[in-house]
Image (tube, rainbow, N blue to C red; front, side):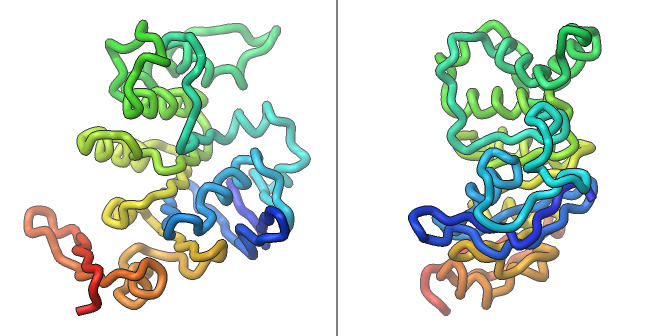
Length: 255
């Protein structure tokens, strides 16, 4: 058991934002979190990352209560890329990605060839070769997003949490990032808006008003009835003749 939560909940100003979430991640899987705006996806990710303390329940990392672990220990096992990651630092792209190695460094463990290799691999995987010397704050939103993803990859975590990682990315980089995440030897949780992208995940969990209303294989979960109830749309499933993958065509009217 790498990461799990039991009866997880969080409230603000007496309003329950997330409640009663039970979830156990399977080693190596890519889990998609989907739901309408305000359904609690970002809040759940921040609790799973140990950044937001839950109001109820607990998060377990490698079987240990996360609340009892040191931040350094959490960071050696888990990385989070937030939806609106800051980019105010006047540092270069390479320096930003190198920060991903911080949890592994200490007075007794200095920068090594292994750290150099991890940074180089992350830059390559995020398609940032040639950008290393660029000032981070001068990049476009999509380019900065790739830098934040590269920094998380440089951590070499067991668990990678991403909050809408394809926001601000052009379609080529949307697809490349999603395929990269699925190919990595890590367990991933990705909050997504695009339900066709969610079809590529191993499992998806659907949130509605802070509660998990469904969790399972995408083909089993994304039924026409669920699309109507949770998202307020009608979806027709089509099969792409080129590769036999299913895609969803959406309608705002129930026909």
